[in-house]
Image (cartoon, rainbow, N blue to C red; front, top):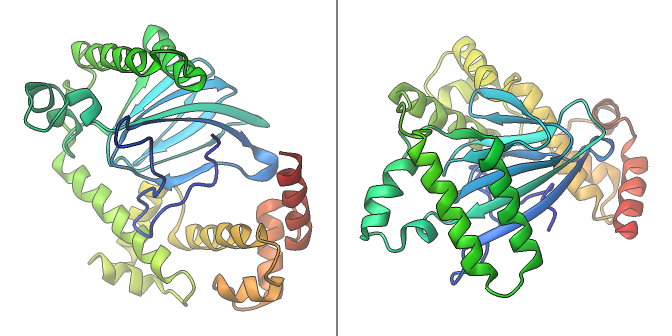
Length: 298
């Protein structure tokens, strides 16, 4: 299942249901194409996630950290970690993502496995991510292949390999060498609050004063902080968010360009078309046609 256009709530929590109650594991094979502006937007989820770069190179942002994963490398993203991904200097990249309810590893909440080996390592004072390479990255790929093929006993095999990966992460002290600075925990939550505010009010006129007051910072400090955590100014992010929202509506092929521009918070249609072309390389009507052709080919 591809997951380049995921559904997220206003607070950035991903809304996709990962797996089932009986087997809470989900596998996503995601191809991200620069031509179609495919990427995984900033989001978080209560599940832990294991990533494997099957093809290409991928730029990841987890919190304030930005890094590149090469083909054959992997990543562990902790529960509630704010993250995004996009192809890095390459036309397209393929990711395997495996989302896992931590309780699959820990059994029930009161078990020794949960209380001793799982829950302490997914709390908010632990590291938000760990890079994986070599044998550990290959095991993530193996889990992905097992989930794709779904051969006999695949659930047992997936569970067994996930436990081996988790044990290796703990044994190598990847999550125990240091705790996340309490100040960073506050920063992560503040960043989520700011993004939540922008997502809630993106259809309205937003001022830096409003955003700064929402998180009790000065205008200058709120702008510096946002750029540190998200990688761009609040208004660059807001513009791109509005454009991405308009891209979702363009795929619907029902609403007019004028209606879409107004709905997504643009003051004039001409300004919307100008910014859309700068962002995507296409006018809105051309992008709509191009994306519909892509969907029909798939």
